[in-house]
Length: 503
Picture: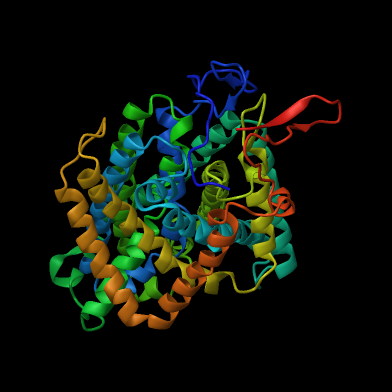
């Protein structure tokens, strides 16, 4: 199969108030079907905020505090990391409107650095990153739903996995049925988690008004419970960076954005400062009710916070975590399926995954593939180990993508760029990124090395499946490929009506 560009349908503009089962977007020639532009500004913000804010801010912000060594430095880490995230998002905004394809950093790396680099980004995402992340978020949802039924012990492992699977299957169905339904789910649950965090912040303000700000006074805020170490401070920034993970997910659905040249940067300008504000002030609120030692001893900080201040209403916090994670699973399904869809369209995954429903305009095969791979990941007991191994690689590709922005400026200075930022910003991001990666390699060389090895297993797969063009016919047929002008046969429903067509 070749690495060249594929012909695709032109997406027609479609407002968010449109019919939930819209007519397909046709090519001018009448032969193609495309993903439709149904994501407006509000839903775009919902995708970014909903994907960044998962269970982490509710469950365990202690990782930043533990490595920072003091409350004051931990708060500085949250602020600085939010600023660096905003810079990275600005770089992605320029890339997103310069290379207006769905697929995010996979598409950018592929177009700038070539097929192998892009494939390795896709390979690590398909193999580990998305299935493990979605499995962990779904299991966290199940844990907080079942916990009230098992107050004195942990919920049974089988029950956890079954409920997580039900959550995943339900949301996969919603995403297959309608883009608008999926974005509505995201909007509602994003609003819910913001309201819950707003409640935490308000309670923190009330605590401050009552005089409970001992650990916020500078003399106490920078009182260390452990000596400062550069390596541990770097880990604190790395923990903070992971908490902001998901800021780039809107770039995976660029082709479905209404007026992406305006709404992509607008969504970033609204969402990243909002998340930074919420993260910083939620952590300030936590410290008004708990000492650093109490916070470090808690495995679910928001729940402990609620028990201290809400009394009989403390059930609000575990429910908030459950709602937050439910929305997180939906957002991850929505964006990851577009990544796999984009990879299949470029010939890096079986072409079956590049098919979309002719009426609903949803990438059903890609969604089902995402769902099945996540369900399989739920069957393993090593999910968290895998996340540790590939977290370094995921962050590595952020830097590679931002470096690609500089390379593209040098190689194609006259390329049309509806958004063009100063190169100072990608340089600042890369300096921060290099600082974190060096200390990650220094502090956890084995974990980082295994992550690199997992990624490099994609090299032979690329050369066999993508680079090798003159493969036997049975090989291409097995991967749902097509050769030359031979087209994939559309899939039909039980009544003989075509329901899925190649993009």
